Length: 141
Image (cartoon, rainbow, N blue to C red; front, side, top):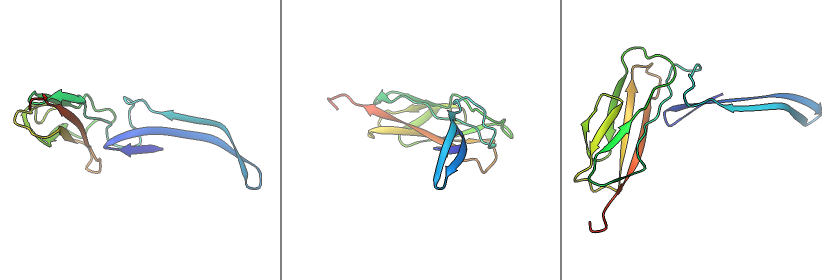
């Protein structure tokens, strides 16, 4: 069984031997449960596994970095593309790459979310992920 959440495919394998002993009573023998490691290849779908990484908190007014550390799974159909959007601030470096730098000067928001849409894979893949950073402000502000 494969579960897909937040643009990330999570691999889960469940198996068990089931035997019926009496009417309306079943016994599960040798249950097995495993979660595929995050860097495992995904063979059930042509879509890669990935996530956006960012800090939990950053000082307001400083540059913030968002990045996709890797794509795990099948090879892309063509060149991989990265289309970033941010909820506040301005992308000052990296649009079109796996890492962006965001200028947070003049941002009044309490947090900034960086989201990316990855291209280069089949169109039926939902390849969107995001990460949010809480902005810390000085008490004088």
